[in-house]
Amino acid sequence: MEFIVTGAPRSANANPRSRRRWRERVSRAAWERLQDAGLSLTGASLYLLDAIERMSRAGSDFVYVRADPAPDHSRIP
Image (cartoon, rainbow, N blue to C red):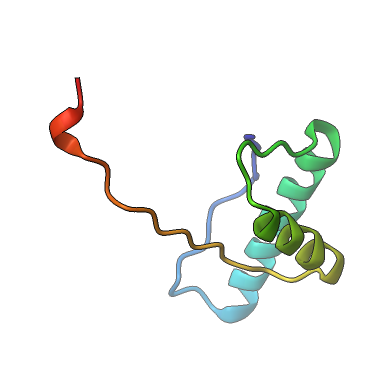
């Protein structure tokens, strides 16, 4: 998925109100794009899909973290 957010991004040093407005603009642009394009996840666990559904209904932000074993780099062709 890709989308455009108009305007200059706000730095972490910007005032809290300006940062909040920027986050809202990014969120709105992403949400509008998802409404037209839909969301497709390949190989997503039921755990992740459930979290996406719950957090979307609640309007909550969340971070998904997954840690897998490192690949065996000696076997890369």
